[in-house]
Length: 232
Image (cartoon, rainbow, N blue to C red; front, side, top):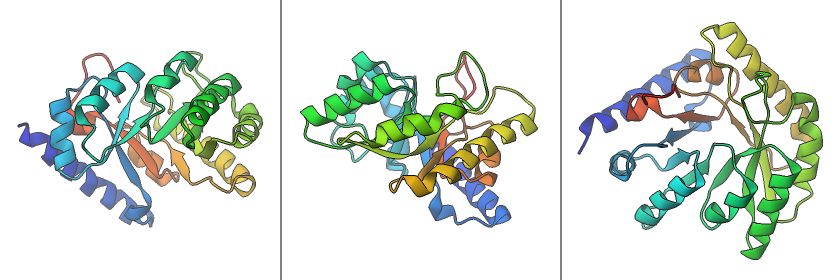
């Protein structure tokens, strides 16, 4: 057992508490999602045993394999990566929240798979606030249109918005990305009764995200350790 994982989780939660205290926010408003992509089931089990119930994956097949091994645990699985329409069927049975709806086509497929299962699937619309071509997400000026489409679907519940801050060391740019999403969220919230989640902030920028109003944090490296190929 990797005891340091539980310690990492504890330290992270303490830090989130301190940031909330500093900016006058209630830590209970914030939900931590442990991003477990690429990490083994054993690590997820250890972190789960330490009290963490929300886990994020970015590949449907990897998520399904982990769900199959841990299906007896009360884990809430979050799809945080780009989701292809032909992969929705692999996660529709058990996914807790899809963070990455960025097109009407994807929303329609989620509706189709949810209707087949006689259930309602919760989703967030992903907005590309950093204006980076390589990132998924709808353009900010098209967010309202997509939100209205998603909210019209009977078996899909629109619960808020998600963004990824620009990959840069310039904190002012990242803060601007998060401010932009919060502004869109505040403008749209009166029109969408189920709006409650603002998903932004990873290991490198979660403090800024908390300061700017995030209530879903997607954090991997601070818990599980660094991945060789990316920073999250």
